[in-house]
Length: 193
Image 1 (cartoon, rainbow, N blue to C red):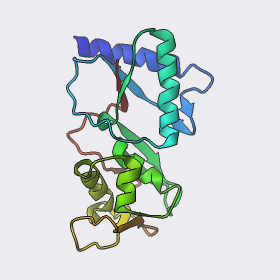
Image 2: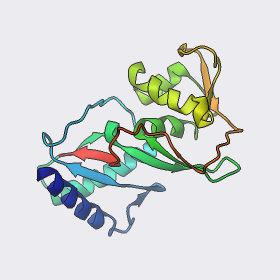
Image 3: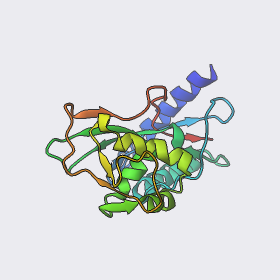
Image 4: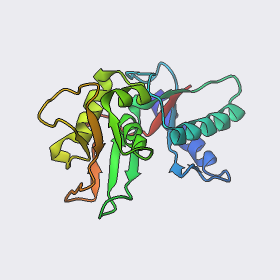
């Protein structure tokens, strides 16, 4: 019952948010948020992810909107439950990727620079290796067309100085590619109050 109420209230809140001047589009990102009560929903949390500036501006804008309506209540952002749809502009086809928030944060770094060392990815995302590695592996995996390329493809582990770059010749049979594990809930960037 509480979960259904959360989902209904969250839908109404997003509808109100999208009626603002920005129409839910901030820094070129269309934001979708589910606001859930703490203690009602189970989740595994990692607070260490450093969101890219564009995503962070979205969260700050929604946070201000929420606090203006609900004084005394705070949001706790939970990127581990979110997913994002990212459209590419650099390949021969207009690919649309469904990614975890973590994968999105990793890929958005490549808007700034073409090549990163593994250590730089750790430092910039603030993700511990036990979370970063599987997210990065999905982006490097040959089954998914190697969206990213690692310097030493034959070694399963990442050395701190190993380089990772975008695969300029990425190609996939479908233009819609889902890299989110199937057991995840599709809820967008989530916040708890």
